[in-house]
Structures are given as structure tokens and as C-alpha cells.
Amino acid sequence: MPGIELEDIMEGISVCRNQDLANVFYRLHLIEAYGTGMEKIMKAYEGMKEKPEIQTTKNTFKIILPNVNINFISDF
Image 1 (tube, rainbow, N blue to C red):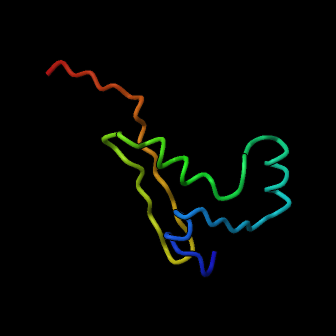
Image 2: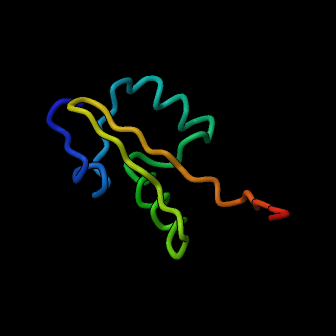
Image 3: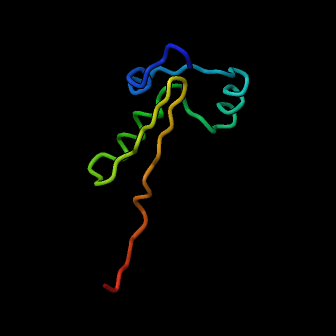
């Protein structure tokens, strides 16, 4: 959203583009609250070797979550 920086998102600022859709997701228990996701994601990766990667552009951000449940088995 214009005017929102990565630092704002990391602090829990949430700007909804479609309030009606967000309300439906909330009533279906698909979201808990607005602006709490980034903090929960970062806490979930505390102490992990791999951390989420955040990519930003002028108008968007994308978070890539490493799969920490994969065990790589090698015969080498």
C-alpha cells in the first residue's frame, strides 16, 4: 500500500485493501487479527538457523518462509 514501509509492517501496521473480504476471513477464523502476522512469524523462527526472507518493492512485500520440517538425508 502506498505510504507503508517495511518497518511499518514489522511494527504491526496493517492496511486493508478490501475490508469486506477481511471481515469474511475473520468470521471464518482464517485470520485472527489485523497486523499480528509478522510478529508471530518472526517469533516462530526464533532460534532457527534459517530465517524468513522479506522482499520488497515500492508497493508490495513478499515473505518467503523456509521449511524447517524437511530433513535432508544424504548417503555422502
